[in-house]
Length: 394
Image 1 (cartoon, rainbow, N blue to C red):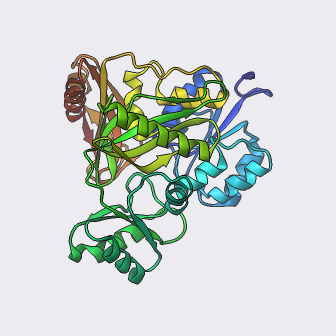
Image 2 (cartoon, rainbow, N blue to C red):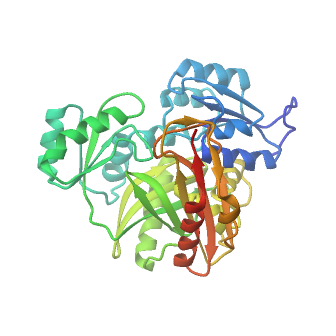
Image 3 (cartoon, rainbow, N blue to C red):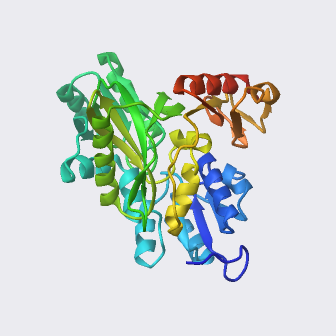
């Protein structure tokens, strides 16, 4: 394995499909190793586009536009950063010899909740919530009735909680159907109806498939979601040895089935010693941003090293750490940020402003990171730091 010279005839190239805040951190890690990065997204000046050597703005669900860029750039690695991509073209490109990370199958399955749930529950026998799929409102209502309230309703094609609802009352059943339709990503209007698990907590277990070190695991990450979207996370999340062993077994089974090399964010519900598989992403996970302050290597460096076949450490270097996001409130362009001096006066904290060119209500614009001697101390510092940052929208 070798790494060439960026912009040279022997450059090692990564084509990054999706250029959000996670892609930006991954891009920075790649640049540090002398890799040439081409960042692609559906809008201009996305965070990773601001640091990559080159970028394109395309319709990410247009297979021909993706194919044109791949043929033009001839990347060594195609690294999807988001779910809203035409995945069929990635399967075709992989058959032609292009290296899709971690694998085209993994990207395809994890974008489609039908495929990933059937793989997990029916083929691998993993413990999941009861579920049904529906492609029209009549079948949807029937499925809700059969599973019984409360239920969780999600589009089969979505990410980051888009279109997700918890339905507790009969009067909200129809509303949840239309909310899922309006916020679905990709093609199709099918939804998944899931039994609501009364879990004690939810974790992300960052799981790494490597070429030479087998399967590695980061310490479990606890998190809080608001409307299905990550808001706060911390590491490590305390859980019983029995539950952690079960979580690792689940993560290994699902990642082995998906294949390839890289980091996976495996989301699970835990109640006592019982563990249910929920979802998985074949890339760095938003809740894993806390690893930027807790670990010897962040999830972004780990993902890159796994792709390249380089040695990896998942060791934590602080007793506990946390992240807390700050958001915009309205629609605007070119926001400003105030309060950094006060925020960063809190010891053992850092700020990451994503640099998104526009705002909208509840859009994640940055994250505060903190570490401490305990999870509670770290969480308190991260939240206090984030609350001091003001997003000024003009």
